[in-house]
Length: 145
Image (cartoon, rainbow, N blue to C red):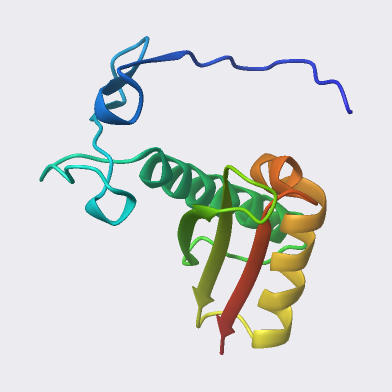
């Protein structure tokens, strides 16, 4: 496992698990949680799941990694739209697991250029990609010009 030199540490606390509330210590992120009906829960309207938070975080983080890689190559990926679909389901080995489908669209970049940037961002830069590698099925769809 690689060690890091922390640049920023963010803290959040959840109470009540998937049927509770989670909030960052600075109050910037707050979400009431509920287990979806598809998972046997009440599926309360206006509530989120940990998968919502994971998908939002991964999409934002990957967009930042893509922009970082693009700037290094004197390209502009600031118009890239990154959509992350995070799914949860039972694992063959028991318990639950995640899978991810990432859709990256930027018609201002050639398809081959965008695909190369996405690959480098995933392979070398994005911490979410590093954290999920060899543990979560992550698939990419890249749509350029």
